[in-house]
Image (tube, rainbow, N blue to C red; front, side, top):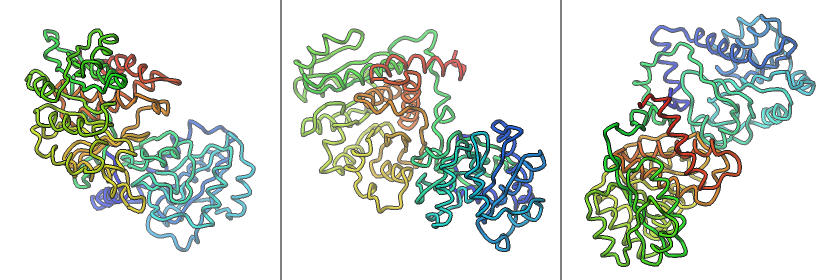
Length: 506
């Protein structure tokens, strides 16, 4: 279930299912039942349940939840933020079926003040259908819900969060658990919406997977469904040359740490050989630190060109502390003309800040089509794609990354708490592994190396980037609080062990 559907796509999936003979009210019954069954894990016999319903189908789901809770003997109150006479379609049917009287919103608000930690609030106000900021009356209600000590369960999506972009439309419910149906939405995993969802549960309510082909998902959750058919276990009769050779371009002698982190990241990701290329003074510094990673001096651009002529080299990382300027531009151009897979990070990107179109031209002329990966954070993205970063733009992070990848002709990894990976063909995934502790110096250098390590082993650019991002984030989760970049490197083997065991790559 790694496909992600926008609210419009989910609406189409519902419509196709209903047109296929599955009554909409049955979908609503199934949705409400699914929510209530998941709620059981947090309900106590004495729990009070407040169900807040809105004017659409999300409110209809809430009516079903309320009735089921009442049937089980819970103390249930139902509030509706609109006139029941305005209800239409399946929401109206669900309301008519409910054997409960509505509680006035004034009394619902008063009840909110009395709730304790064992009570439950059900947010069935708007779900993913909301496309504009909440009005003042509902805004006040949401703020009061958020102040309550009771546990909050959101139906489909916390009200106030855009299902398409994760944007908070003025204010949004902070749920402890969000129960959605059939497939999750981008807004479940894109910040700031992701911070409002709590635990995300996906329930199947009767829609057939065949409708996905007609709906045409445009985004995916980053997981092994994207890259899981790539073995992590080396071949029994293999050798280091089967596993690829990664080159990492070093910065000057006082800026060598970043390239070492990238080199070790590539090595831990499985690259059979890794070589750091550096000016002679920097090479001496590397020699004092590196053992299994090889070092080759390249004082001039001509020396660098000769090194890249070796056909046994598979991927190149350039950018970590490489220095911003003409020399890095020249080395980037040489990397892209070398028929090697290339990861462009940090200084390799910022060296083209004034003329990003020159970088895109080099990529377009590259022989490594589909195997060039750009890894900007938001600040670097803003400089390379200023029009796509415009805060007045309607582009969400998924759309921005897709447009950037198409413009650059390369895979783009837009880093952040909700890293998005896109390729020029429009494939895009949202990553959810990782922790806030990744906000530390050098973590991006390790990521660049991990991606290059997967490229060296033959993965396509999109697959290498998606897998690299996930592995990097999972290593951070294992490392835990207080991690530094070096910890990521030491925990990558733990992640690969998990993958080998989970995917059965023996």
